[in-house]
Image (cartoon, rainbow, N blue to C red; front, side):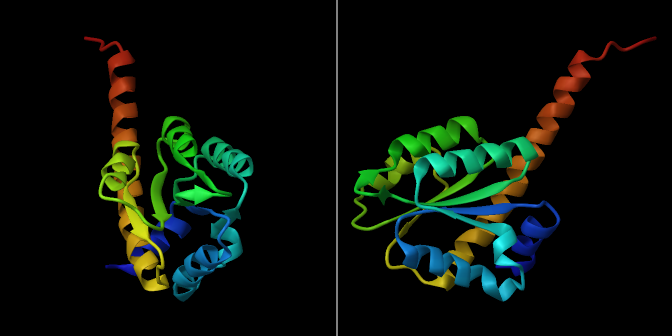
Length: 164
């Protein structure tokens, strides 16, 4: 895996990493995963334990056009985050979502993928495994961005009237 892909995501694409969890050890692991990249974690890493605050952060990133990787706990404050995952996929289509959880079943993982989750990780997780997933996610955000760009170009071309 190439760490430069992740650096490019944060520096060149102005990408953000949003960690939504009430588990501070998850946030700490995510922060430690990006520390070796030499980036200012305060600029690229956002943390929220409140789902409404996280939605506001995502809306702001969407307005600014920032690509985003979301690391979200499967359960926050005793509640499953299924509704939040659906909201993220519906409103923030450029986000790549990674779900982290405990006691994930064989039925849960395919269900999460159906909701648009790109990766599922079981706790406990290490900074190295998070780094690997973040690199993969950064590659996916670039693909998503390019697909959206091509769609925009096609839409613009269809709207143009060709002159003879």
